[in-house]
Image 1 (tube, rainbow, N blue to C red):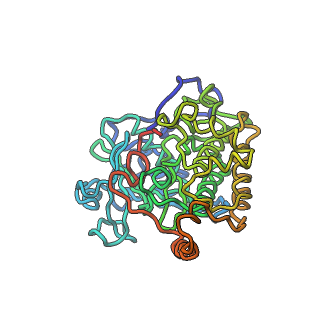
Image 2: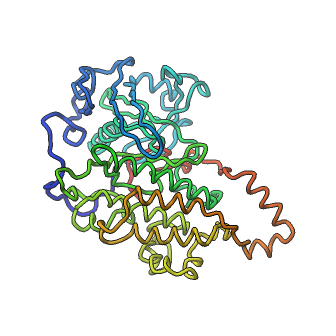
Image 3: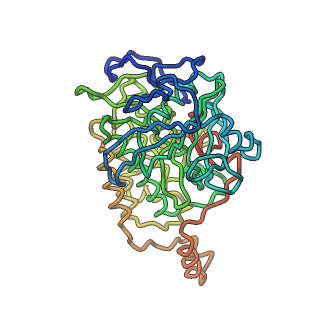
Length: 432
């Protein structure tokens, strides 16, 4: 599910391995159910080789709290393949949402209470991610998704409703995210620009999700933070998706884990790419890159840009500390409708997140605190000179219309409206 760059390294400082099968160690395609760890023994769980039954569930109790509220106890349904075929009308082409290296994603409908398949428009919409049956890497990442999303539940993590392992196919069922990915809102041609406040709202939601992962009992390193993995619900709340590369953080006083280098060019922290050393604050670097994309409206990497501007971080970083230079690189689609004080503080935060030394970077708690303070800055923005020239006396009318529809979004096409590989849900392609 990821573009691997670099080479495998010895896992000297990674968490100690256990004797039982885990998503990171089991990969037997011929078994009925792959290993999925849980907090308690479940004789019917995939970890213990149980068979699929539509009434089976696996549960994991969590008592941790974070900024966004109390963590609930997930209750994953083990779907049968027949149920998911029914929910998606046998994976008909008109239910297709997108495709990636892991496989294809389809829209389906299930009963809100029983999760039984239902008719189109009845119950709740879900996204069903269907694997490529011959993908060993897809199996590993399927297991990782169940391991983490089955264990954690948080308002800023995409909710995993259940899974299926049957007939050499492995599937995942997620909540359906109406507004698709942040990537498409920022970069898709013809997309309606996100306002300054909406950009900050999405960033705060994603920061809350990362802070929760980092502060969990055993800290989790997300490892692939980028715009295509941030999905938006109908109210533009940002949620993290795609836990295929997530990894448990360092233990026993270690500062990092050493692992095979995987992720996405442009977002991966430099120390990780160079050495394979993965820190909790490696995620903070990726967050800084995404925040820079939110400010500039430019992709982290783009070979179509002029020479010297291919890498956004290298090109934009020198401008972040100078007010005059910062104004020049701000997303023109914002039409200067943002408080300059807030933009400067956001630029300063980005600079700290992109520090080359991970020890100097702020924690996600500190990042979240800074973002909330920036969001509270409501200085009256100056009117765009372009807008003044074009609209004259109609400026006040447009302001009223804009404030009346703060959450308006563009329509999404089936193939280009959502996240990785055109999907609103975790796909397997790590591309920029």
